[in-house]
Image (cartoon, rainbow, N blue to C red; front, side, top):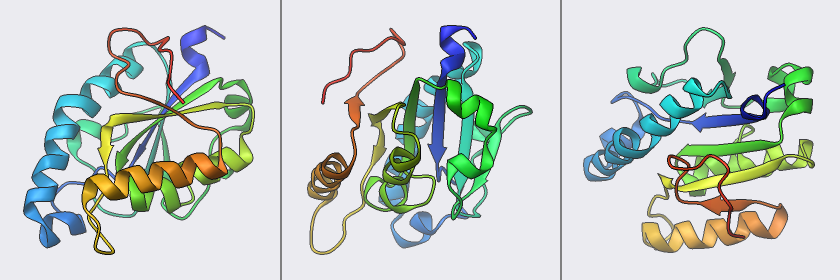
Length: 177
């Protein structure tokens, strides 16, 4: 297997306007769309060009057409772990999984396809959160930035994860802990 195929991109909850965030907070949704079009779409295009495994996890809302699954990519329901819905041969060969999507303090950290749950079942795989390809939501009296940092610290407390801000120039990125 080529080195590029040892990588996977995991996209979590990148919705069109059917998602709850659009209805509750149009400004938050608009910023998320800016991240999606300026950061996530180029990362997805690069991953597809290089032959990475692409895993889409969603909670039932419609994905944006620009990030919708295509033939050969995996779709996993929100409440289902990655290790039960992707071929074991693929998962056993993965060296690195990059996570993108919304929101860090909810979907990326708590759902069954999320970072913490994936870490528990794939201990030998390097997990990298692309920090510029996600954001947190304001909740519990805290700002988005506060929730981002708190959630990231909580994730790092329970699993080994690296972070990076871009993979577009060099897919062999050296990630910071």
